[in-house]
Image: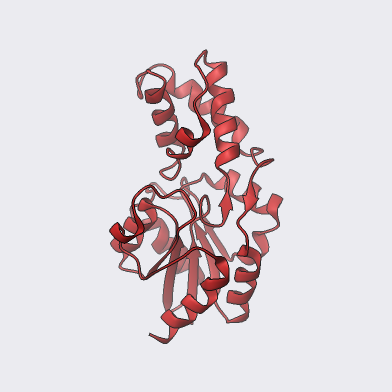
Length: 218
């Protein structure tokens, strides 16, 4: 049987508005100017440590300077409740239900820390769909290292694994793991789709169960 493992931010949910709001509140607390939401969105995907470093660099500060540790602490303190403006992408719930009906085991492998990951899943009513959830701090390694993806797959215990994501990090993770990759094109990706390794691309979650079924037959 097949396991389908998902990235979270930019794949199942659009959390960029809350991340940008949270980031700008913390920047203001540190005496720095707000950054445009679209710029902050470009920093999402490689985990909170990377995000804070990028925020500092964009603000003209040293990424590893004295502001890093207090800014990281302030951001993390707010992160578990930063979901007021986060939305599930259209069609996700129906697609998850369809995959479960097909007998697929579902999991999440994200670079978002595990505590805010579980918090947003509970808030959005998505926790019930996932038998395994790994965050960016669940292991010493983070994506694009394939270790978290392998750990999620092992927890699901299925013979075949398909990974679904939206970004360059997700594409690299799947390639490193040598697993089939389906890319959602409406997320936070900056590179053209045709320049990223993938088995199929989709812009509507109505397409996902059919794409998974096709890979299951392959």
